[in-house]
Image 1 (spheres, rainbow, N blue to C red):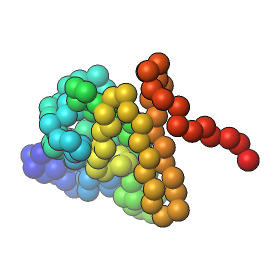
Image 2: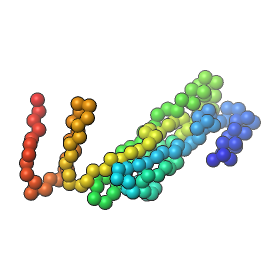
Image 3: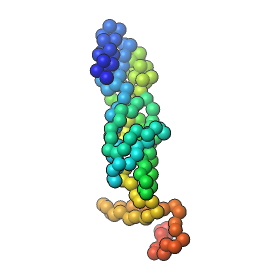
Image 4: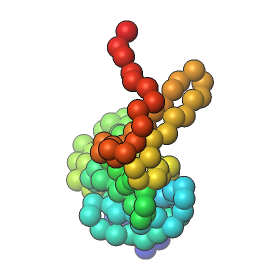
Amino acid sequence: MKKNIIAVLLLGTLAPGLTGCATIMDGTKQTVGFSSNPSDATVIVDGKVLGKTPLTEDLSKKDKHTVKITLAGYMPYEMTMTRKTNSWVWGNIVIGGLIGLVVDSATGAMYKLTPEQVSAELRKEGNASVKISDNTVLVTVTLHPDPSWEKIGELQSL
């Protein structure tokens, strides 16, 4: 990583405008932390198994990423990491480095992945749960109810 930064800085010094501000300052990868409760769950990003939680991984900022966290006996957690524009891109616009802007765009350095930390709260399979906080009620239910379950209530629209 240090060699890459030195090479990019040297290239930028010898041939100004051939590198982008975001590429120089932040690079093309971002370290993302993955955790889960309970821990020791399998982290899968873009279909590739990365390991067990908790862990950190350097992900390319060029693409959005699909994250899946699984643990036997628990419902899988799935989400998509999105991209936001990196503030270093403004350096290209202010300085007028159109080539730098193109480089940052091509390498993905012009983006920042969000969220920076992925934390999965895994729920047991087949269970329903209710969580109340700050005047908000969150009800989690299974899509395949067990026929032996007893009906205890019904939601109605207002």
